[in-house]
Structures are given as structure tokens and as C-alpha cells.
Length: 297
Ligand code: DGL
Image 1 (cartoon, rainbow, N blue to C red):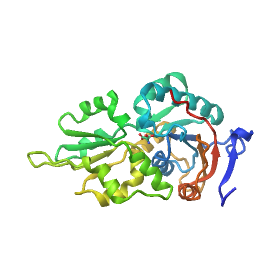
Image 2: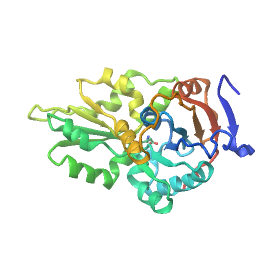
Image 3: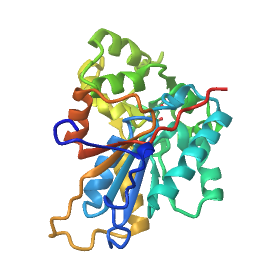
Image 4: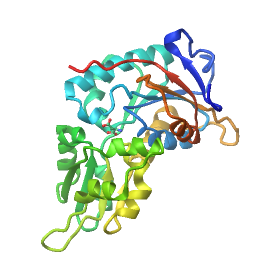
């Protein structure tokens, strides 16, 4: 045990039934990502349904998803989900990851009866917000490569110039930020430089879609390092609205019922005290290790 963070090693036989009694009337929502990016979605969903119970799962054994092939990602997420659903029996799962959502949702929905809410690049609101009609979609290389993403752009932003920027390192930089080891400004500025486009006719990017849930963790720094001000679009509030649509609103707004979030990590490598502090600030006060090594093909 360290500070107020309790460790339960599921591999050692502990169960979660004590943390979340099955008879509780509050829905159990499982928020899933490859790492810590999904915390940006969790925050918005908790705001919308503060009474719900939450499990946050970081599949850090598979991080970064941006580097996995589509078949490997489908296999991985399906296998991890099978185990998580059996363990927690959530009322709803949020796949708080663009890289996964853009490819695994159909197979998850086909295989499991639990409702899934995914996160996909917010190109539709971006097209509504842009005045210059020059928009950037900033994502992992995996999300940029998806035909799903290309189709979204063609459908909703056909009349815009859209720069598709696949950032190889940004998700890792966001993880480092959470672990109290931020990368230098120059390194971060170089990683986002290609988001800012000036066309021959003088029009320039005025909207950037944050199409990886890790990126809002770096938003204050993006705003400071941007060569000119732009609108940054984070899809998390829309995801929270979708969850409320499916589960219904918080019944008793006045009641003080906020539960701590159970945080689960699949890597089993151990979390630094600095990271534990960042997680505690975001409500993850109980952390478990559900070791699920990724076998790389
Ligand atoms: N947070 C994930 C997303 O929204 C991606 C990070 C990764 O590459 O694992 O795309």
C-alpha cells in the first residue's frame, strides 16, 4: 500500500465484488483505453453521471495501440474485453480510444450484448466550427490510416482542406506528462508543427480535432505552443452526452454520491508514485493489476 492507494492483485485471487456490490442501483460504467488517454473521457462522463460507479481500464500491456495492425488490435481488444466483462459485468462500456474504436466496435458489438460507446475523430463538429475551411485531424498513425477515418472526412468535411496528421509520439508524451516527466517544449512543438497549415491563398488552419483521447491531457501546452490560436475540438463531452442518452440522466442531482474510480492496469509493471498522484487527482484511488501480457506476433 502507498498513500491512500490500495493495491489488489487480481492474480493473487482477490475479487472485485466487495468494491462494487452487484445489487447497487447505480450503473457501472467501464471506461477503456490503451493507457491514460481515456481519463479525459472518464472526466466528462463522470460529470454527466456523477452517481455511477466506474472502472477505468488501461490496457498498458498493449500500449501504444497506434502501433498495432488492425487484426492484432481486434484480437487484443476482444480478448481483454471478454475478461473484463466477466470480471465486472458493467452496464455500459466506453471504448475511450479512437485507435481502437475506428476498427474494433463492429466485432465487439457482434460478440457481446453489453452496450459499447466509442470515440471517433470529431470531424463533423470541426467542419461546423471552421471558418477558413482548413482543418487538421491530429491522431495516432493507426487512426489516420483507417478507411473509417477517411470516410468520415469525405462525408462531413468534403468542402474543407483537411490535413491528416499522424503523430507517432504524442500519446507517449501524454503518458510522460501524467507520470510527471513532461517532454521539452521544443520536442512537443515539433510534434504538432504540421497541424498548422497555410495555403497558397492565405487561408490557414483554424480548427484542430484532437482525435486521440491522450491529446487533451496536453491541451494547455498545445495552446501555449501553437504558432497561432486555433479551436481545439475534444470529443469527450459528446461521448458523455451519448452515455446519458443510453443510460438516462442522473436521477437525484442533489445527492452526494460520487464514488472513487477503480483503476485497472493490464501491464503489471508497477506505477510510479508521481503517476499514482496524477491518477488520484482524477479520482482513481484504488488501483489493481489485472496482468494480461500482449503477445506480439
Ligand atoms: N488513446 C488512444 C486513442 O484515442 C491511442 C493511444 C495509443 O496509441 O495507444 O487513439
